[in-house]
Length: 329
Image (spheres, rainbow, N blue to C red):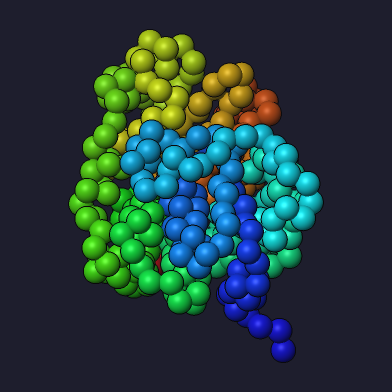
């Protein structure tokens, strides 16, 4: 009988000496937190570690220990055999890293998203995890590396951000048990939360106000739509990497059950979705080639003028379906 995926992952990490870590393009708190936590743990084990991403981390993550070691590139120049493995975190397909050359070495695939394609030599994905950081915590524990404040801060950042500040429906007792361990190892969790949620630029505050002022409502006021483009970024002075969290603001209204942000930047239209409780926006994003979680997802549109009305209709249908399920419960 083959070992379980976590055991296979532990064996692969113990056997290797040189690792490169990566995650999806346009990284978020969970992808960066997971990478940094694992990198610190591998450092402790005496491994050689590099972190390469297609895009830099968001500004609010700049104070995380080790964030300055992340290399930004679109290609890994090293030949095959330079690394014993590439560890890809929170990435449903290898090409979502947008870093060429990672596949020249054995790939260790760690993810918690539904729909992961299993592209690694070792694949470990668990959709029951609230964040990829939960899986990284379990891997670190199996590697017998003690939690330290740098590891803990990275793990807590991943969990905090991927649960929407502990508001999404993806949390379990496991989530809070890991957070308890993080706090016990000396992490100032209040400070981490302040860095994530209270370190915005003035440009982001201005942008948030403009987006809320121009917000449109569909589905009898239950779906909010916000439109973001390059011109608005320039007018408000908001750095393009300081957009995290803006989409959540309309959910403060009791009536609003889901939000779609239509971002048209550099000629590419990407949609971000957020929702409450049982409203499944992942299925909507997946129908357009995207993915994510029930309450937080995204996709890219090839023909925005044609596809956006369809997205709106499907999201309203998801809201209706959740309401029907709730009334039948």
